[in-house]
Image (cartoon, rainbow, N blue to C red):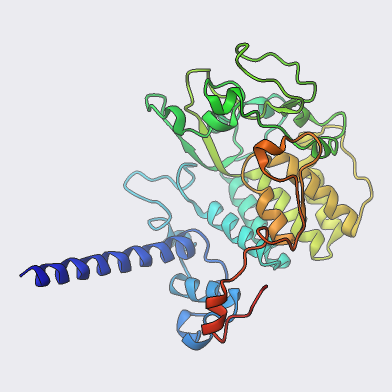
Length: 362
């Protein structure tokens, strides 16, 4: 009796797990990306599925080639009765193309990354989304979905929800009353800050002096302290969290174009974005690696605190250098070589020992 009951429980758990795995694949590949939309999963041999990241993406995406299409995709992309195509708190076609662009960029498939980002931008702007300009850049991000039209996909926590210390703004703002804010001051790398021109409006996102006012004497002050993310009040950590912004898509397209050798097109896209941040911006005439570096500097500044820099370093195989204005007690290390242990994730030896198709990376 007990054994039979346990078997039924285990069978149920197995079925639930399989169902969740299927939903996960559909979410990651069908709704969120349709990353390659080229080869059906039936054409990928099970014996070769682990030979490359490309094959993995192909297998995941073959089951839903049309998920991004307006006709078949929106229910999977978050639709329910009353769902509107461009609700920013739901997936939409512009977001799906944006996710495709992210994946292509990580795979260094730069031509497609540029195309996908361009489609995302076109759909977003056709739906009324716009890059922030002027005073909008100082919205504090907690109200980015109402004060601006830049957020393409975001979480919007209602004011009556008590998120307390679970909120992003309880950790990344400068004014909410939590120990993570009062003593764990978030600062930009001084070298990154200095890449901005004197007329770049994003300079207001940080206090380079460390003398700007704080809510009370219990709040620590540091030079280059964050002012980008502002909680609605010291007692209110509720706020919008943007998962995808139009700015990211412009910077993604510009980077992809320059890495694909299309300098002129890259400069055009970058200039269109950059003048919204620096009204005095004019092209420096950079090409190739120099233009790529200029774009990446702006990307680093623009997306600071939004979860991109770590992965940008990974995908480009770059070292991390935090600079002289960081406290090692908070960040545990200041520099890591691009090939250092603990920086590059290593495939476990037991996997390469027993899987002849898996290549060692250590």
